[in-house]
Amino acid sequence: MLLDPYGARFALVKVNFLRQISAMPISMEQIVEETRHWPPEKIGELLDRLSGDLHAIDKDTEVAWQAEIARRIEDIQSGKASGIPGEEVSARVRKIVGR
Image 1 (cartoon, rainbow, N blue to C red):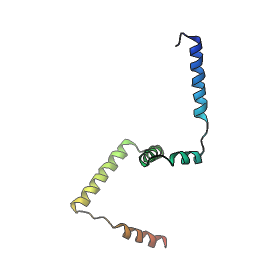
Image 2 (cartoon, helix red, strand yellow; image 1 turned 120 degrees about the horizontal axis):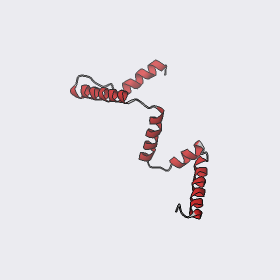
Image 3 (tube, one colour; image 1 turned 30 degrees about the vertical axis):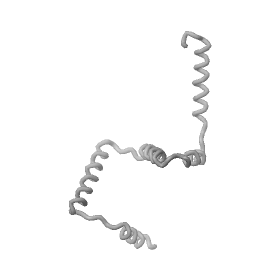
Image 4 (cartoon, rainbow, N blue to C red; image 1 turned 90 degrees about the horizontal axis):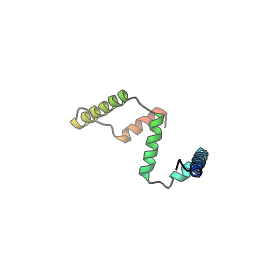
């Protein structure tokens, strides 16, 4: 195709055309409307990718958090620690915020 001057020109026009399309702004409303029809797992994937970009954590911090999570799960499963029922937590929060 590179030897064909018409084909090469066509390829360049096509690339420029695609750049123009991808450069068109999309509104928040258009994004919401488009994703409204997506399956839940795809929406979850999109949210994970977006929040990952916003809240990037360095590898050492990520490893430390994974170790902490594993330790806390082990503490609960072994009986060393116990969880607090959600209703009790909600009541404490309402008391703190005055509701």
